[in-house]
Image 1 (cartoon, one colour):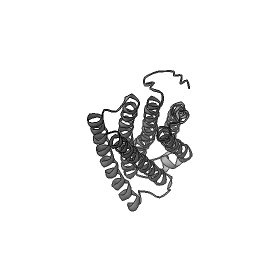
Image 2 (cartoon, one colour):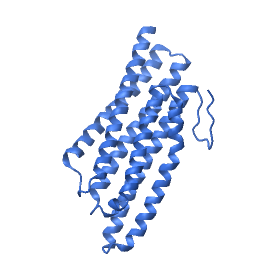
Image 3 (cartoon, helix red, strand yellow):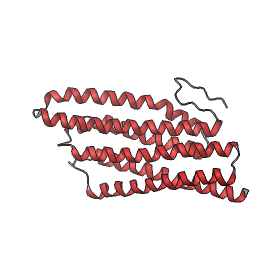
Image 4 (cartoon, helix red, strand yellow):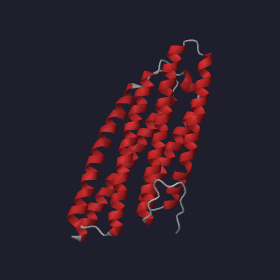
Length: 231
């Protein structure tokens, strides 16, 4: 039974790795769309984002089911059970990141023009790249059992929040110089949705990092204002 259990867990971890890479691809596509100065979203990229989203949904269902099966059929020991529970939490966050990419793409489609977005493009790009790095480091911290990467993610969550507030202030001030106020307000609303979505992606990266630390050292640091991880 031990061999079957090991193979089942390895399969889960392999599929988790695939789901992680696909999620990062989704964020890359979103950054590419945000960075372009053209109005609208290229059809080929939009199709790819939607296609990848369906794959992520399938990954979540498959991995969640396999985790439950391993728990029921093979009686994993404490350390294995901890890893499986952490993986379960992470795959949910990865799927939700995929949903957020779709949400941001929808907001991009609704923009009348990209003036507000382009005005803040440097900060939005910085924010997006940081969110991408956070998701990457968070998932790798679990795969490679390196809690230092997870700690870095949690610490940088505050940076993303500060960028969100900074971009919002800039967008509000920019409304004064745009003549068509009704369209400007609509664009502000969608731009706000986009940057809030990026912040939520970073939040989920933090959730993944917290789950990785739980898997690594058996310490649940969620909902704590401060934390200390000892070797």
